[in-house]
Amino acid sequence: MKLYNVCDYVTERIDSQFLTTYNYISTENMLPNKEGITYANNIPKGNVIAYNKGDILISNIRPYFKKIWQANINGGCSSDVLCIRAKSTVSSKFLFYLLSQQSFFDYVMSGSKGCKMPRGDKQQIMQWDIELPTLEEQTAIANILSSLDDKIELNRHINENLEQHAQVLFNNMFGSQIDNLTETPYCLGDLINCIDNRGKTPMLSLKKTEFPIIDVKALSGKSRIINYENCTKYVSKETYNTWFRSGHPMPWDILMSTVGSLAELKIFLGTKGCIAQNVIGLRAKNISALYLYQYLLYVKEKLLTYNIGSVQPSIKVTHIIRYPIFVPSEDELRKFDEVAKHITNQIYTLNEQIIYLSNLRDTLLPKLMSGELKLSEIETKLNE
Image 1 (cartoon, rainbow, N blue to C red):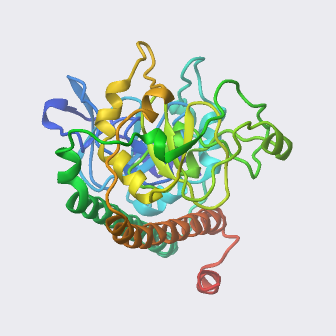
Image 2: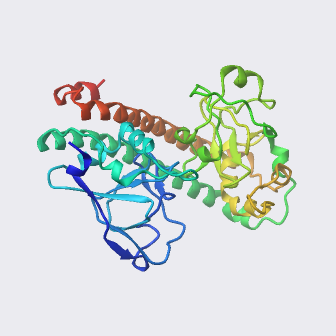
Image 3: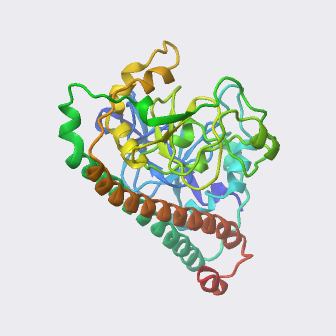
């Protein structure tokens, strides 16, 4: 059976003036790994493809091929997003998971056309060979995978609330003092050591290793935890041990981007990864690292005014370390740090669960789709 037997491309159009920044979908505001969407930066004028709730949207341009989302609202999408609608012979949720497989993305990439930004061949895509179980089995498989996605989404929602809690706590304790600050005896350089390996590019490994390079993309997003799913470059163990002149990040260091998307911030936890181009590490001394992180987040818009780039945004480390910082009393710092550390540890633990559940889902996905893993075996697998 071919893919075209169970679904169609959506070609209906809608005037983009009726869309909002939330229900307009482009390749840029689709998130990877079935995570959903963010707000669009802008909406083009004119007609766009109209999608309905339940339709499956797939980015059809490299390097964004692995983005897929099942719509939970009606809206419109760009021409670089394929909108696929299930026929009555297939469960739309099952079809979503069927198209979420790495084998499907590999197939799309194998037939992509174009040099600069290759696009999947729409006719070839519909020729993908598939096997369908009964509708009853489709529903059961989709329910199993959806239950894992629901747990992942719940953890993300809890983490978002925890991030907001930390920000509110900081604002209530220190916001007015920072906003009314006229002068301070301290600048960032007085309270940090800088881990800076910029200047030359390390030799990259041809294959994935245990040593990812944490670049600007891995620092994107609202969470304080590094998104290793966005790491695409790796180094060998030898390069990791010998090349990085300033060493590697240590737990509770603050990582900051200095080129491209500026002043993106993350807290380094665990032991995984290294930094080279366009990212620096800030190691707190004589101050709470969590206060430092939250302070930098609070003044981020002001840090962006140090942008010196004309073609590509960039900020100098010398400008960053001269930025003034308000230092609360030791008692205030201790009280804030106790709560902020508890929140951060919760976020980190939930994020580790998200990684585990995502890996489990992605491991089960091809086995369930191929019939290698039977439904009768799945309960045991989920309880391991």
